[in-house]
Image (cartoon, rainbow, N blue to C red):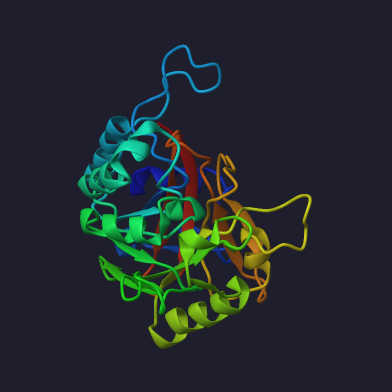
Length: 304
């Protein structure tokens, strides 16, 4: 959505997906900085589109279409961050044959900026994951996986900070608990730390020490668990933290048409989004920031 269209839409309706209850009507159009966050999750090595006769997802998805869509959005707004929330690997013969090489090379061609690590990204072992990293022209973040005693030590950062058109964006990563989900021999001495404790620390560092205008959690811990309501997930994480503006999720293959809005510990709004699986959808969140860094946003899921 173009900035002028967004502003016109907002003037016509008060149904704005906003942060902090702000209205764009108080902003001066020429002072607004527009940042677009594009994201995927749980693509699971789906390179080709689904066939036309597929019973659930006919003629949907595919890397070529996603690349064309991303290119179109970048022409509309050059200030784009492209993120992936994990489980890049495992799901089609492309992974079985190439071991993740093709996935990383294609993501690099699409100019992904950052990704986090999902449980299936360990399916060729931690050595297999590490061996494919030279094919990725983007970095990985995970704040709660401690890789110090593994071959991945030094290859993964807890967070990364971007500067887009004067907007400082801090992104940290979270991974799901591996015990019982992944064979121990595949993740070796990787230590899993509590996502909630880590998120509180990361958000504080990024918002207050690093002075980020936006803080994004790139999460592979799951949207929510009906059978286990107390299990840590993106929804609970949003309610129990502060200073996070957006949680981009994965793991549970949850299809959302638009972000869920959750109140955090301070009563401020957090956007939580996830776009299903297999590259069927591309998530899009548009943030608009005034000179005083007041924020408003609009989000949707785009069918590929």
